[in-house]
Each structure stands twice: as C-alpha cells, then as structure tokens.
Image (cartoon, rainbow, N blue to C red):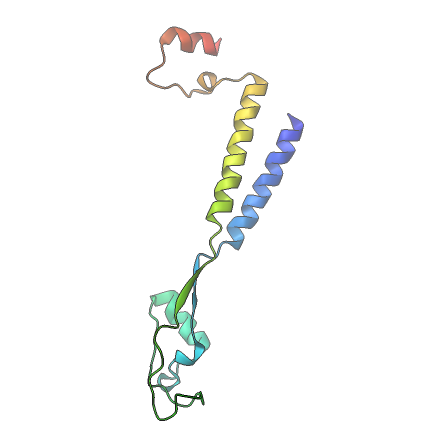
Length: 133
C-alpha cells in the first residue's frame, strides 16, 4: 500500500498546483478602448472590472493616435472576447484518480464499503452482515 500512498500524495500536490493555477475566464480587450477621458488607467480599469464587473468603454475616445480613428471615429466594439483558463478538467481528473486510489486501497486492505458504513438502502441485512464480517 506504500506505493499507492506515495502516488496519492503526489496527486494531492498536483491537485493543489492545478487549483492555484486556475484563473477562470479572462477578458481579451483592445486596450485603446479604456476611456482616458474619464481618467481611467489600466489599473483602475482592472479594479472596476474585477470588483464591480463593469467594463467602461468610450468608442469615441481620442488621443490614442490610432490610424483610422482620427477625428473621433468610433472604435469597433467587437474586440472584447473571453479566454477560458479554467483547470476544471485537470482538477476533475486528479480527483477521479485519487478516488480510484482510495477504492483500490480499501480493496487491498480488505475493508469493504459496508464496513466503512457505506450501506445502500437496497442491500439485504444478511449480505451487509456477511460483508462486515
């Protein structure tokens, strides 16, 4: 059982790393759409986005010296996309592997699910007693 214990510890460590790397969904956005006219810089914009869930955009913003936007032409508002950086699949696989190791250890050690107290309602009393014994 010692090698399975080592593998379980390694998987637990990897699970912790995967949970720490999980960033969820992030925003891809043209930085020139942050309204400088409202005195919003990048750090303030990030604060509003993360704390309030508000994304301020001024499509008529001037002063970015962008070719094609001279004279107050509006920016294209289709430049905001989301990127999924979740580690949910990896986390789920680690949890499933750890669950498999737990079930293997209970089978190897001879401790049945009934002895652990996991008895389903459709099991017969005699079968449960036999499994516990």
